Image (tube, rainbow, N blue to C red; front, side, top):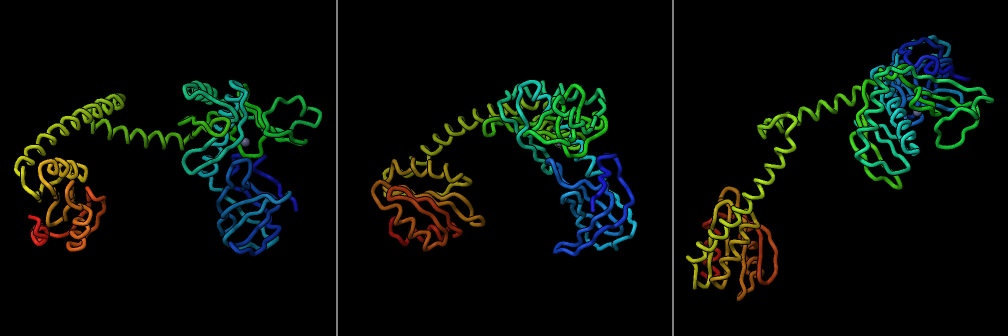
Length: 385
Ligand SMILES: [Zn+2]
């Protein structure tokens, strides 16, 4: 039996009464049909409504021919009159996104002639794909044009042209459609074939924010959000920027420059530290000059710094062994030698002391949980000290 689609008569209808015309048990619950419904089924990129029907929950809604089928978690009795209430917060959000997407697609079509060839509503952002290039610097212009039209609070028209009228309606479509076609018009901005639910006036969208525009297949993919979603995302970004502003002691709109200055200063400090480390390693190496073996412990070196120290020591003795860490945290181990087999010595060390590592004949790097004393004892036992 045909379901009367109340969502097309009034996209803002939140509650309604209807007669149950069918109820069939399925794997995930009960599939219920009504003589009329305000629950929008999935379609045209818009996810289905959810909500309450009778005393059960509507989990999803789909269209099958002329019927709208509600998947519910409780059965209903055929012939009963029941009340349905859609999850309005969810629906209004979806309408804000859907109507906003139409306006952006309409403006892009007017400015560049490109078609919307893909539309996806994610949990946070929605993505819209176009079949041609859009320079990233044009995003602001598109966003400004759409928002100006939103704030004009234009009436949104949804209608079915007669078969005779349809050929003269200049509507966007992915493919030629046969009559009847439902048209959604945002005056001066967009005319498009659409089966989804829309806001009644553009002002309900609130705002549109375009977040990114990246190359996608032959065209671009725009990430955007509308209405309450856009505000929530911008609020989250603002909170992050407030923390960045406090961390850099910078004004809220000058955090980018502050971050760039900090990066420059950090690079200069790294350069200075590398110079100082080089000097330090040369000073340490002097203590081992002329010795066959150097086993040296140094606090808190990164693996890379430990290796640099070991390379420097290896320049003035036959076998250089450097360790950094503590008895509590374990040690990183580095062995460098031009004369002996560093890999064999390293493998023997991590076998005896626990830990792991690897390398080549000239250099070995690894780590061990052993104590300083145990490590010293091991190298003593190798009779190389
Ligand atoms: Zn649509």
